[in-house]
Amino acid sequence: MVLDGYTAAYLAALAPFIAVSAAFVTPLLSSLFRRPQRFAFVFSETVLLVNALFTTLVFYYVYRRDVFPVYMFAGFPPPLGIVYEVDYLGAFMGLLVGLVFPLVNIASYRYLDSVSKHNEWYYAIFLGLEAGLLGMAYTGDLFNLFVMLEVASIAAYGLTAYLRERGYPLSAAIKYGMIGAVGSTMYFIAVVLLYSGIGTVTMADAASKAMGLSLFATTGISTDYATAFTFFAALAVWAFMIESAVFPHHFWLPSAYSGMPPMAAAAMAAVAEGVGIYVIIRILYTVVGINRITWLLQLLILLGSLNIIVGGYLAATANELRRLIAYTTVLDMGYVVIGVGLGTAKGLESALYYIVGHAAVKPLLFIAAGGVEMVAGTTDMDAVSGAASAEPWIGASLVIGGLAVIGVPPMNMFFAKLRLFEAVFEQGLYPILIVMLLGSAFAFIGFSRLWYSTCCRRRKTGGQAAGRIGWDMKLALLVFLIATIVTSIFYPWINERIIAPTAAYIAGETGRTTYIQRAYELYKLIYRG
Image (tube, rainbow, N blue to C red; front, side, top):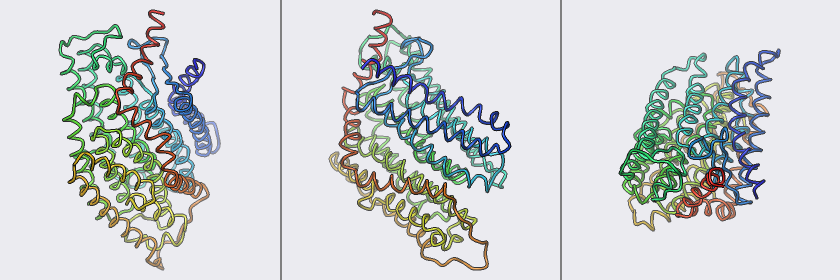
């Protein structure tokens, strides 16, 4: 068991390090080759596959061996040094990031080669995005979380502005960068206030103080820990609501996702929003404790409902394919935020399974949108007539993905909505049920318009000749189609083995005490052992 813990800890620490190191060396190594773009693609895909293996092994150790790896950077134990601590929730999110990125990257090569030059820089930025998201999922340090947030954010800004040479306006990147900077600064202020109040930024140490324990030898200047934790929770959750496009901070997402390369948008929608929700769960349920901030949970339910209404309406009226998919991401985040705000294990089950569904469905839709652009030369829904008939892979992806977003049984997101429906009903929040049904209706209207344009209308003659999607895009679409179907058919098994135990662990006090205990054991071993 000890050896398993050491192995898992090293793997968790290596994954972000390998990704960020590879991001820096990719342009340098690519310059040594005659075809730098091809080398950058192969090199980045190799790194991403290695990290997929590492995150899978970490997940295996945590879920099958019941090991919670704790890794100390530079040998400094908590709460003095930076610590990675991976529990069920962290291993779950890390696995999704590790599996999605190499699959999305496969679909990028031919598309990028047709629209841009010097794409070795794209692969470098893409590796940086994975490094930031993995660091956020695995870290057990609140300040290190800020550092990893900055790494992921800068990469996301770069991807948003990447296609500027095609005439895409930089306004989307500027808007995203400005609102992202506000969120990052707000979180930094939250961490500074908490550190000055309780004297630590280690998550396990902060959680122990929130529970009234004095396990770690740290103190702050505050005599009222309750106030310090309340201010921290409010500012930190607000910051990550911005990062997760929660109303009224959703406005940056459609422009950013429709401006960046579709494969980058696929990765962002698949796991970046989910990682933002993961951080909110970590702060509320593990560090602060939901009993201390019930008002904040109620606010999440309200804002999640507004996300569904606003995102759904905008999706129903969108006239551009990628904007439609982006607005449904805003819509779906509403369901997730409501599940988190309920404060129950069943609510968290729905939120976590929604994140699983997102990781399969949104890459499927965004990659298909990239295929539509290659076939029709545009993603304007009035000008993509018959794109799906020209490429059946695209048609199948848009239909299956759309049905999942709408919540048609037996698709994966149907089960997530059904679980959320049950959780909301048990809490007696009946108006929320109406909002949920309204969101599905909006999604149905939006995708019906899309299906009619791409599948039912004949292709216009005399226009631009149809292009073809390559094997790389077909392979990625096939894998995500299979992932969508598998997570739909095997919902009972996945929920019973992974989702329900993780939700019960997070929602109960056992999860907090276990998270604290694993870090304290390492602290005790070094200082008192």
